Length: 326
Image (cartoon, rainbow, N blue to C red; front, side):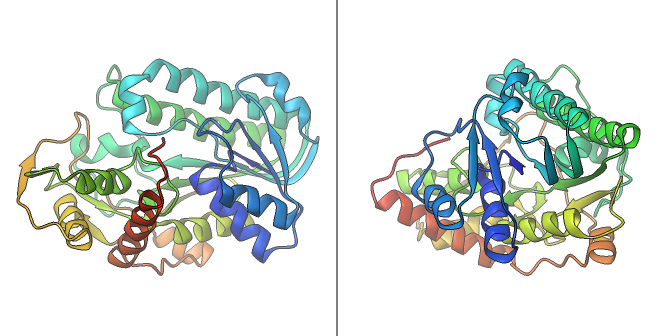
């Protein structure tokens, strides 16, 4: 069962599992991003996936689900820096309710293993505040630099989820594994993320083109690699109680990303460096040694290849007359 299985990462996990495993899949989602798109509808129909729509911040909605699942992927949450800055109270309310309701549903159900999807944002403050090592391993202390800043509400809820799943599982006797995603991107990810946002800005002809946070660094992970790392964390033995960083160690600057995106978009104008979001960390790159050695995880899509594929998808999507969505 995939809770949040209609979202960006959830949809791609469902697609991979339906094409490569003999599982009976269930997708639970509130479809907050709007009506199911054609890709989702086709996948559900082709592979006979059960869909249970509803508001899972309401614990009663879980009554629509079965009481027994071998595997539960918990992906549901409200994400995005724009959302965190504009509706931080809703980030807290929705994500906390989803985590708590899921854990209490698991308490009443028969679940073999649960996987909770977390984020590198949980330790974002540690790098700048304490100069922690980069690439960064899983045992990094988690840190919020400014607890009152709305930017960090998402990270706070993911910390809650990590603690909740690890401790509930230990007490209640089900298996649980945590994966922390690091800048996952690809087609169909919505528009409130850096790469699709760049496509929209280039298409509008912004001049000069502002390069926000040009000297900050990130390691971007293409969606197919993120899916493989997630499925490995769920399916490999001896991962109970473990946390895995899922990403790549190709650390690049935001400037590198934007300039190459400009090449792909055939931008001929000028660039202008500009400040980035308040609270955005200067550097982030995961150490994926643990995922490599324990899971056999190995990213295969370089950032330039993945960026090209993603930009092509968004250009085709917009040129077909489709609208920008969240």
